Every structure is written in C-alpha cells, then in structure tokens.
Length: 167
Image 1 (tube, one colour):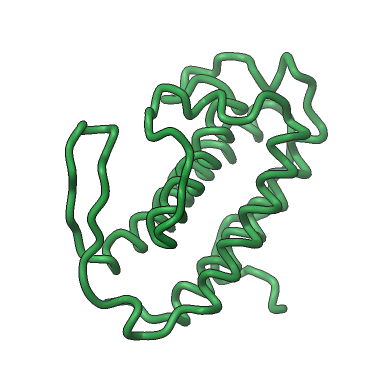
Image 2 (cartoon, helix red, strand yellow):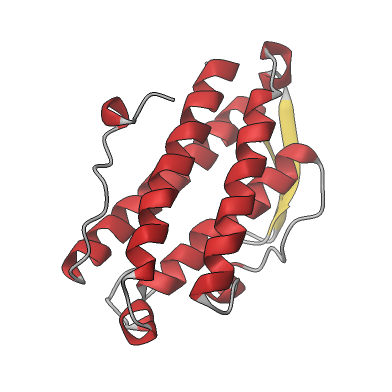
C-alpha cells in the first residue's frame, strides 16, 4: 500500500508546510490567532494546536512511546502560546522526519492497536492505514488553516505537493 519513501516524502512535505504556517503565525496578533472563525476547532490557534497534538499522539503510537493526553477536547490548548507552539512544531517535525527516515518496508506490515479517546475503545487497524491517516489528517487541517490564514491577510505557501522544493 505505502512505502518508506512515501513516508519520507510526506514527512518532508509536512515540515515544508509547517514552516509556512510558522511564518504566517509570526505575522498575526494573539487576537487574530484566537478569533473564532467558525472552523471545527474554532480559531487558527486552536486548529494549529489540534494538528500538533494529533501529530504528537500518532507519532507516539507509532514509536510505542508516551504521547499527550488522548482527550481530544484538550487538543486546542495543547500549547499555551504561539512561541511555544512554534518551538514544539519544529521539534516534532524533526522527530517525524527521523522516524520516517528509519522506516523499512517490513515496518509497514501488520497491525497497530491503541486506545482511542475519540470513541473510548481499543482499536486495531493496519499500520500502513494509520500512517496514511496520519499524513492525511495533517493535510486536511492545513487546508483549513490555509483558508483561515488567507482570510486573515496572510500569504501561506502553495500547498501543492508537486511544488515542494527539492532538498
């Protein structure tokens, strides 16, 4: 279904897109960041926090390490300030890249089991499907953020994967 190279490409895409978000966040006041814009997670900052929280939670599941509290209602306040969010975003994007770089084809085979706070139950799914969900979740919420940031007068980078700079 997916390959280690797919994961590395998507980790690179994730870092590129988040760099653009960090630049846009620097150009906004706290009022603009926290203004309710009618999105699922309310504000730009709430959505940024949810995305960071979700990435941290899924990566912890993949690594078999301790992640954040799995209560989704707390996801919008994961980091208290934009500066702390930006620092944690950089750190987590680095962890995602290292994780993806270390994957082999055999790592993508089999199932993963975790406790889902969203449905309050233990869940087992194919590992490759969960990785695909991880990257799809990022793209989904960054699309929402792109729209909110554009409406707030910011100019995020293009989101097209085919235009990602070569490194």
